[in-house]
Structures are given as structure tokens and as C-alpha cells.
Image (cartoon, rainbow, N blue to C red; front, side):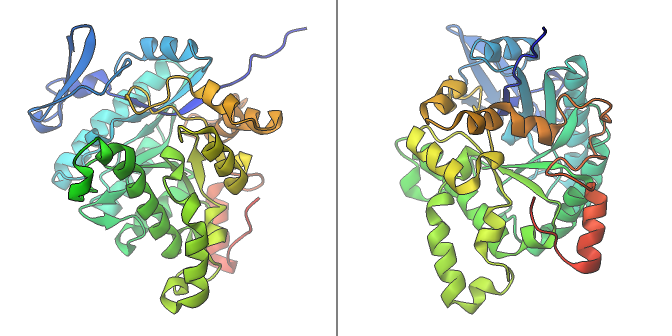
Amino acid sequence: MIVDAPVIVDAHCHVIAPRMMTSAVPQQWRPAIRRSGGEAVIEFRGRQLNSVVAEFSDVDVMLAQAAATGVTHLLLSPWIMLVPVTAPVDEAVRVCRIQNEALAAAAASHPESVRVLGAVPLQDPPAAARELEYLMGLPGVRGAEVPASVAGDYLGDPRFLPFWEAAADLGAVIFVHPTTTGFGPPALADYYLWNSVGNPLETTITAAHLIAAGVLERFAGLIVLLAHGGGGLPALRGRLRRAFAVRPEARAACPAGPDASLRRLYFDSLTHDPAVLAGLVELAGAGHVLLGSDRPFDMGAPDPVGDLAAAGLRPGDEQLILGGNAARLLGIGEDGAGEDGAGEDRAGGGSGPRARLSLWRGIGFPSRQ
């Protein structure tokens, strides 16, 4: 009897597509990777990044390194610095297109083990919606990575509604990642706090903004995955509830209340603490947590599978987080699944995303499955 090997998916793994390091890309968006003393150093815009501790560009090597920790599949997303939301729109569209086609080529070269998320020019939400529609037709592409803020605007801002509508319509997975540059109180400048504290705080703020602004209520088909275990969002759920109860402005845009939207969100497992991870699973439900390592960075998890095991979850819940949830959302192992990934309702059963959006437009919000 042949027993299928378990699917274990790292859903938070960054890559620099080799084409992004060529003259096809404008100089200001073109990184370089060099070796110094056996370690990778990333050069970008006159700065050097020495926090890379694993492979960042060669997908075959990345798969081998992941396999050494028990991971069988990768969901690759861009280095967030290469999501060009600070560029002029025409340039950003060009950079996104080059990157998305390169990422799709990587997925097409590894159809059994790699899925990817692309980049969109979110500074122009209608243009971002158009690029999302294009990239969702590419092989192996399942959505997009977006920064937590754009020019100081967090993701619940009404300007982003055209993008969120398109994401819901297409059934795209939208991975929200801190900008690493947009949250800069002076106190975070020292002791690496800009990363250990600032990055998850930025995710916390934008997730709370999405909830309070009613974006997840408005678009029933939206699939939003938060980096770093959602930052501090789980610990603040009580305060969000209290504000909803006592302040009219806190409930003005989210009539169903914050818990309804919290239950809609997905989270990666990257908390660096087994008790915190167990609490996240209790809050979100095992069906809404995905394994994540944040490779290749030093603040990632060298052994995400082992970290999950340390949380002491029920075996069924652990299997969902290891790969079951990601396989469902990303279409891994689906017989006859279209390469565009847009025809299935990957968040739940029943109808596809366009039908769910029509339901929202016509008669209201279906409950979450």
C-alpha cells in the first residue's frame, strides 16, 4: 500500500528572483547578493543587509534547506523591500510585472513544490487591482504580498477598497507584511527593536485598522494572511471589543463587531514562543493558522516544524497548520485545479469567489464556514 507523504508548507518564505538583479530592473529597485566570509550580504540602495542566514535566490537550494527541516512545499513571496510602493506608478507597474513573471517561472519550474505570491503597485489601488488580476492568471501564483502601510496610510483606508474588492473577487491570498521601514519611533532605533517590536506592531496596527474599518465585513471573499502571528493583535482583542461596546466611532464601520472579523483572518505561526503559538491557535482556530518561518532572515524560525511541535497541540490541529490549511488555500494536490487559481473557493466550501462577491453585492454577508 502506498501512503502519500504529508504536505508541510512554509507559507512565509521570501525570495529575490534572479531576474530582479539584472539590468531589466531599474537601478533603484535592483539588489545584489555577494558573499563575505561565507555569509550572504545583500546590497540595496547603497546599504548592506547582513541579516540573511539562508539561501535567498536559488529556489533549488531553498527547497533543499527547507527539506532538511521537514518542509515539503514553499509559498514564496518577495522581499518586502522589492514591493515598489514608493516608486512612480509606471515604474512600479514595470517592476511588479518583471518580478511577478519571474516568480511565476520559478513556480512553473517546480510545480509540485512551489507556489508564489506576487507584488502589486498598491500606491495606486486600481492599478494594483489590475496587476492582481494579471498575476492570478500566471502559473503557480496564488495572490500577492502587500506592505502594512503605503505612504503612511494603513490598509483599512478607503483608498484601498478597489484593491480589496478585486482580491475578494479573484480569491487571492493577500499576505500582509510589515514594511520594515514605516514604523519608526526613536525608541525603536536601538537594540534591534525596530525589528523585534516594530515589525509586529506595524502588522498589529494595520490588522486592527482593517477590522475597525469594516473591510473584512464588506468583502466576504477576502483571504488575508498576517505575518508574525498577527503581531500583538491577539492580545488586544479585548480592548477592541471594549472600544466597540463603549464608543460609537469604534463601531461605526464594523457593525458585526471585531470578533467577527478576527475570525476571518489567517495567521502564520511565527511567534517564537510555544505558549503564544498555542494561544494564537486557541483564538484563531487551527484552521486559520499556517506554518511560517520568515526564511532567510535571522529573525525567522530555523525549525518551524519543531516550533509547532513544541506548542503541544492536538495532532489534528498540528496537521492542519503544517500543511492542510495551506494546501486548501493554495490548491496544492487538487486534481484538475486550474493554474490560474481563480476558479476555486480556497477559503471554504461551496461557491467560488465571484459567486460570493455577487452574494455580498446582492443580499448581504454569508457567514464564515
